[in-house]
Length: 193
Length: 168
Image 1 (cartoon, rainbow over the protein chains, first blue to last red):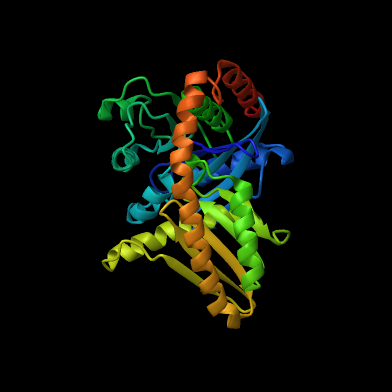
Image 2: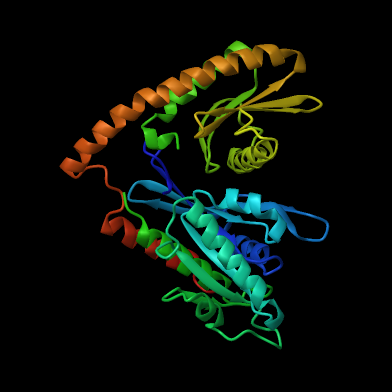
């Protein structure tokens, strides 16, 4: 459910980038922020540790423009990937209208992807959200690595059907805009009020 | 969420303005649990309120987890003491956070007192409006009014998304 301000005619959606540690969530967000025209974006906040691991979250507001009299915004967040930040991850996810799951395509990281996706399911369920109908876009990131998990393998392991999937190399921007385009389309298509 | 309950931004801003005046504070904000600034009062020219709202909501959520670790449901007040500026944050009905930014730590007693009174006023406002909103919402639904997510809205929004996120 987006934030709606009827008085100012403002509509704010929340999109959260979720996934295992170091899968490229912040890289996605920073790329999008840099690629957008200045009038479409607010300042980006990146809260990371010295080891470039996201401590709390990254965030920036994206201005879609005025549509049917409403100023439409997307607040873009990432969550910390490391397993021990479970509490902050769950909290940032609360109230999300859509999720981009950034999977690490390195063959050695299959289990971390699965574990993280299961956590996402649990988190959503804890808010009473049915993850089967919730807008989730699955991004297979780091497709430039030599040893890759095959496309479709995460869905197969988890028994997922019909989830939109993209391939990306977030470090050079490949597939990043396509992913957010798909994810935000899903959010709008599902929006009802 | 505060807005879902039919509370008007201008009404909240007026209540916050009163709090700012009485307590001699700098800025007052009401932030939703989702991290959106709902209403603002006082001087906000020095402040990125969008970023502030996102960070405060995150901070409050983290504090809730800390509270649970020590066997509390929630810490209802957070106080941040700086060199010159200080922040008093209080929870409003588990749905929003009221932020008061003030200078001069000696004001803390007055800020706490006024913040408590304002918190009660806002809580009452939310409760009172809830019933009214439900009633209005029922009426609007019957008349087919107040619907934003029309097919036209969606079409325009999807076009805007395609334009903004075109592959570069």
